[in-house]
Image 1 (cartoon, rainbow, N blue to C red):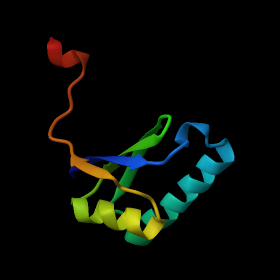
Image 2 (cartoon, one colour):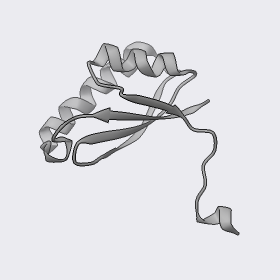
Image 3 (tube, rainbow, N blue to C red):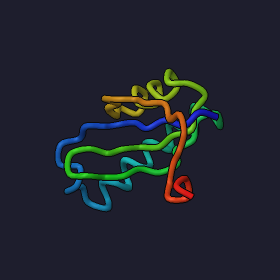
Length: 90
């Protein structure tokens, strides 16, 4: 299944409390349950003013539908073509 990186511009994201992050996560999981098993949230990285999410989904449209239903921004959705890491250098 294709993998996507979603960039969400959320001013002050790095200052969100654990309770706020929990609430956002619960909302996301609720939408994922509604959409079914074809879309999966892998994990997210929270920075100062953005959250970068990694999702597995059949297409970009489903990623955007998740964002719309959850009320989350999806400022950029990029399909991952390949993954590299230190082992790639060997």
